[in-house]
Amino acid sequence: MQRNVRVVFGTILVMLSTVYGQITITSDNIPHQVGTYTVYDEANSVDVDLGTPGGGRTWNFSSQVTEESYDSWIVDKAETPFADSFPTANLVSKQVETYKDSAIGYIYSRLTTNAMTSLGMGTVAPGSTMTMVYDEPMVWPLPIGYQNSWYMHSVFRQAIELMEIVMEMRIHNLVDAWGTVNIPYGSFDCLRIQQYDTMITTVYVMGTPVTSDTTGWLSYPFFAENYGQIVSIKSYPGETNPNFTTADMFTRLSYFTTGISEDELLTQNFELRNYPNPFTTTTEINYTLARDAYVKLDVFNLVGEKITTLVDGWQTKSAKTVRWDASDLPGGIYLYRIETGEVSRTSKMILLR
Image (cartoon, rainbow, N blue to C red; front, top):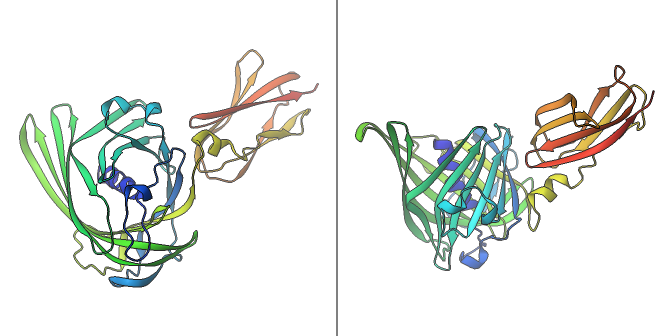
């Protein structure tokens, strides 16, 4: 559950952009174009050097070794499954954590001249869906500049049969530093926000509170103009030292583009083909993944009967080669279809006898 909360509030930060010095964040700086696509790499328990508050600072976050990643798209609200639950939303981010199962999250927000407001989220997983509409939305006042401070508060609920989980989030924010952040993807002029986070989780059974837990931590998100969040660093729970040196969660930008649909991203450079074609016994099917994805590769005959499944699982972004042995099959035309999430492509191959 805390992981979902981090994703929700992290998504708000992803969509905020900043500039160096004392230039403020306004609604005009916040990326909101449908087709904006971002990839973040993540790691747990990494060493960090946070430096000190103030101006003209330099932070180097290139040496940390990341292990996992998640993708984020700004998408058309009308095409999302929970649009009716968030009638005032005008900004929606779709998130896929590529190292996990095929669950997809949709974060619904409202952007105005004076505020960026997170309204809730929905999740689609195999065989289930979940919607979380916040009783009290999380509000970022706009504009935001260096040395600004503000307090955010949000409450949301999740019902599970006779049990209800109520989660209250409190965040104290201070833009305490600006400077240059260096990461493998490039160097960025950034603002740093120091956040003191508190989560209060209360479990009710048939309306009676039975357990309550309070957890606190420190976070430092860094933002750059036109890119949003560049780096985010979260302490271990219970941390009170603002200069902690080991992060519980480290997140770093690894790719950013605008004006591209999800289908276009996944199919660009897809290069689905097989060689040799025609072939007599075996052939190699080649394709390229633009990002980590759950891949299914099936072979069919011309009447639509599935002959075999060659791939069924998560694969990392790279060029792939899959060998198919058809020595026991009659000659003719066969179709092979690859599916990666919401995208599928089909090609033809000829087996000679």
